[in-house]
Length: 342
Image 1 (cartoon, one colour):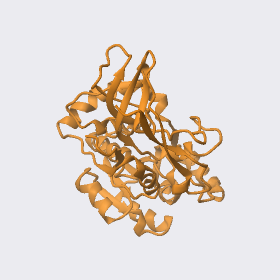
Image 2 (cartoon, rainbow, N blue to C red; image 1 turned 120 degrees about the vertical axis):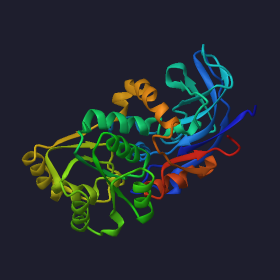
Image 3 (tube, helix red, strand yellow; image 1 turned 45 degrees about the vertical axis):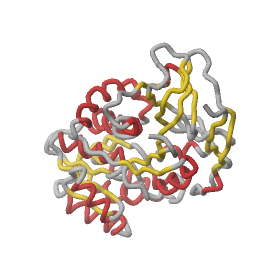
Image 4 (cartoon, helix red, strand yellow; image 1 turned 90 degrees about the vertical axis):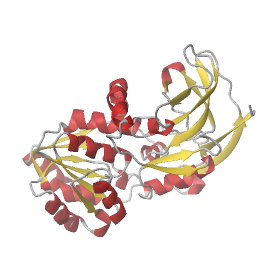
C-alpha cells in the first residue's frame, strides 16, 4: 500500500462563479485508522451543487470548508484497513470521504454496500440525491393522483427521481431542462409527460407560456431546484393550495441576480393562493435513509427506476467537472471515477 494520498483542497474562496484556480491539488501522508475508524480507498466521488455553498464563508446550514481543507463530498470505496467491528478489509462502504484518493471514516459515519448494484449508485439514485427526492416529495410535496407536478433541473439525479415517483403516484409530470437533448431524455428515459427547454425561452414570460401549454390545469407542485427565471415563470401558474418544496436555488449560488424588486409580487402570490413553500435540507431527514434504501433498492435493481450517471475519469479532473455541473453541463448524476478503480 502506498504511503501517500492525493486530495483536492479549497485554495481560495470564489469571487462570484468559481474558477479552477480556487482549487488546490496536494499529496499528503496516508492516514492510519484509530479505534472505531476504517481507511478507505475511494473509487467514486460525488459532485453536487451544494458544494458551491460550502466554498463561501458565512452562516449556513453546515460549516464552510476552510482554506486548505479537503473539499467536502461523499464517496464510495474499498476498505483497506479496519478497526471497526463488523467492517472487514475489502468491504465496500460509503461516507463523507471528501475529494481524496483515501479517507478515514468513523463507524457511525459509514454505510456498508451490497454487491448487487454498482457502488456509484450509493452516490445518486440510492444515495443523498435519491433520499432528497424520495423524502422531499413525500414530506413536502404530498402528491395526489390527478395533480400536476413541474420539476426544475429535471434530468439531474434529484429531479429525475422526483418525476418518476410522482408519475408512479398518478400525477401529470412536466420537466424543465436545458437543451433539446435533455428534454428528450426527460420524456424518453425518465417518463415525464412533457418537457420544456428553458434555454429556448430567453425570459420568464416566454417560458411561462410554454409551461402553461404543458400544464393546462395549472401546477399543484413545483419542485424548486434552480430559482431564477424558472421560478418567476412557474409562480403565476400555481394552483390554490399548491406546494413548493425548495431543494436548491442554483441560479443564485454565485450571486448573479438581484431579485429584490420581485419579492412583493412573490409574497402576494404565496398569500393569495395559500401556497405552502417549504425549504428543506436533507440532513434533517437522514433518519429516513434505512427506510428509503429498503424501499428503493429492489425497484432500482428491477429496472423500475431509471438513472443516469455522468462520469469523469480522474480525481485531478474533479474541479473542471464541478464547474461544468454548476453551468448545467452534466447529463445525469455527476460522478468522478478515480483512475485505476473499478
